Length: 188
Image (cartoon, rainbow, N blue to C red; front, top):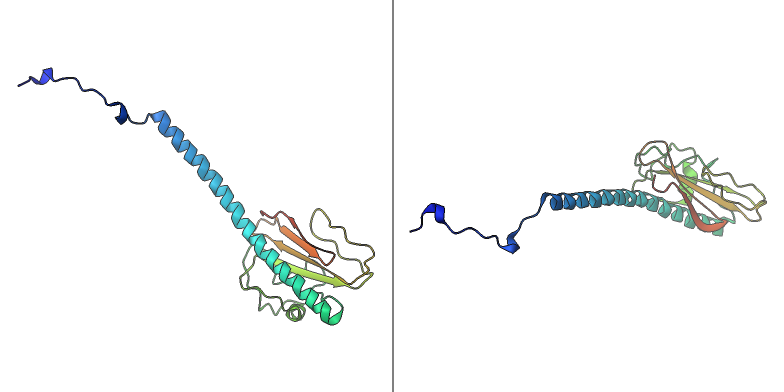
């Protein structure tokens, strides 16, 4: 029998070595950086879904306007200015599309028959005019170039949204002059 003080020395196996504190802290820091990038990316994704909703409604307005023109040879104006918002003034709160009978141009929106199944944080305005009439100026910092004078009936659509309620708006603008949607502050 061996005396306790004479035990053979323990040898460390090379494959069972643990992590050092520096290695562990490096991995934790890398995970933190990746998590921060993921949060920023997710926020941008969520903001872009809001503008995707507004783009879809603008597309529906464009289709409704072209259908209205096919029947009447004019476009339908649903506001007196590009800040006459429907369903309501954007303030960061979601609103359903229908039922805003108190809006001053509710009947015009009803005639256009534009609907949305989901609530929206955006307000929409549509101004239309006859040939020769000057299109209104938008609320965007870069003003789209409209023809002057116009030779055809026209419409201009403007959408504004304030998702976080800080009074900084995301704007989307489209018109009958081209098929594009101009976007400003889309991550707002």
